[in-house]
Image 1 (tube, one colour):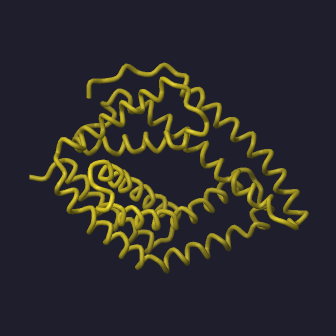
Image 2 (cartoon, helix red, strand yellow; image 1 turned 60 degrees about the vertical axis):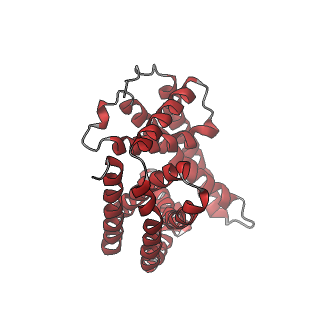
Image 3 (cartoon, rainbow, N blue to C red; image 1 turned 90 degrees about the vertical axis):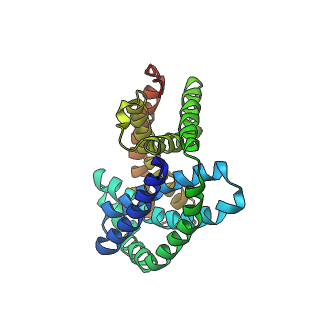
Length: 265
């Protein structure tokens, strides 16, 4: 009989290919976002497998899934920038940057590479499937508990801004891994889940703006930057700086909140 972890893995494999098929059909922002979420859930599985099996048995899967994730990420980051510029009512800068054309081109390239991505993901499954079958049912439970202990211990300390993004990734791994232990249970029964969910969302919103800040900084570093672009960029950076401060404040507020009493799960 399959363990909860093995059932979860089978569902992830099914959803991964279904979501990639949806991207192929629609090319919409929503389907791409859903596909990246599935990739992240699969990466959590790989991260877990990496903790219990020799590196040589898993390194090929890591390299392949990261290559797919990175390419999807390039397109996603451009879409994040476009959305922020539109919400901030900066059509001139969006036009000067040629975002619409860049996004259409990136979508075209990603769609062209879908057959390659399917092959890569199949190779990932060929590597991970046998490892999942070998995995003792107790090990996923121990992994979930270990992540939770680490999250709670880090929370007692002063988590620096530089550590926020990695801390969020650990939260997401834990939130995904909860479902390995018992797929039928409600994750909200875990007393710490709502708090950590709010915290990871706040850090994610903050990090989205950091990505845009880095993008603007890269443009600023270019030589012979257009005068009009420089003017619009400077105005955008002022607004962005204010937005980042607001989101940073939200994260700090959550980090300073009283932590719920931990459950025995």
